[in-house]
Length: 261
Length: 254
Image 1 (cartoon, each protein chain N blue to C red):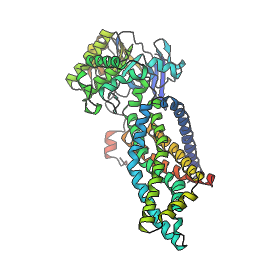
Image 2 (cartoon, helix red, strand yellow; image 1 turned 180 degrees about the vertical axis):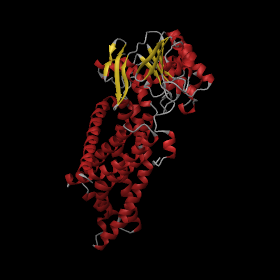
Image 3 (spheres, chains in turn green, blue; image 1 turned 180 degrees about the horizontal axis):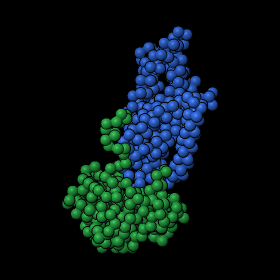
Image 4 (cartoon, each protein chain N blue to C red; image 1 turned 30 degrees about the vertical axis):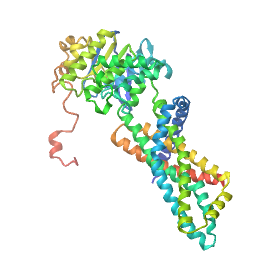
């Protein structure tokens, strides 16, 4: 991404953002809530287009592509949503089989083998007959991961994969992300604010702040940064450049004043 | 209301109309591919049609029975009870069956469509499909739209038949109109033109109601409140649109 700007209505989200994801590596994109991490993913997947600047994916500038070309490009990527986004009217097996059925005419026995191997990879082969509503949060995310890799994508995008998971599920997801990257050589983009978890697996990290990249480098480099904003985020401090308080009128004046609220 | 506010309402109305029209064009473009997926389509016809059968048949029966009572009461004042069959059949075929079926469809199937699609939007399922390079318009919206369009005339036909049976039940069995006269009058005075009017109306209502339901669901605000509001809008817009179109079509057919 080169010099990307994007505004939501009249609220600017990105302002001259530069970011590079290297092939075959795990890139972490971190940042406080509300800095546009999810918007960044929507730019990469061409759900929205940048107001200015270039977003280049697999060597193609997204702004120059038509709908069909974008769809062709999307077949080469997989995305894991925060809540899994499984289709609720079909069971686990059919959810994973869905992209295959939509994009190929493979015979049924082959689809069955393909889906079962992907489910085995995330440890949920036994859950193939369950409906999405019967799954726990961590299981739903693993099924979604199986679905994301069933078409053998070159790039996998994880949107907040660790949110709301218990320590065991979290460890499982972490290992899976690492494994997908190592074993299959999939380029991975992980968006999250879980600094500790991410730094154990990421090759490169970017820290988003104020609409641009505040810092980049390996997780170790980020931790050693002397920038106050980076240090505050990495250590989780309440005081620092990112204020704990949302801008407000003077506390005492508001409490004892005569204003309506 | 000031002129400024009136203009804003008007502008919003026009914008909405344009957005629905664009949506319809995009939807129609996906209907061809959707027709090639009979399994998906059949499932939606079942959802919109078969699952509305009981409410349609029950309503048809009662509407027919009321027609029998009211019609008999009115006609016997002129000593022409034997025209009951004609009155009931024409009323049902041309007017009551298409309109009431459409209103019931909006409440039963339209709301289900809107809330289902709206919830899919709210839970990122539609976005997930787009990322998987599957057009949700083709996979989700088009089969549901077509299912509704196909189901509506069928439901209307069933409503007419059951309604006519209900009118016969009251007129012949209860009030003692001669059975042979009832049916022969009906047969003699109802012609193809009347049947066509009902069919055209039901198809138009089917398109309007399904389009509104799918559009509202597809464009619902992805929150619990947004889906609720969209569902309400579906019922209100479908009902008003049905009655408005009914007037236009009736004027056209007379």
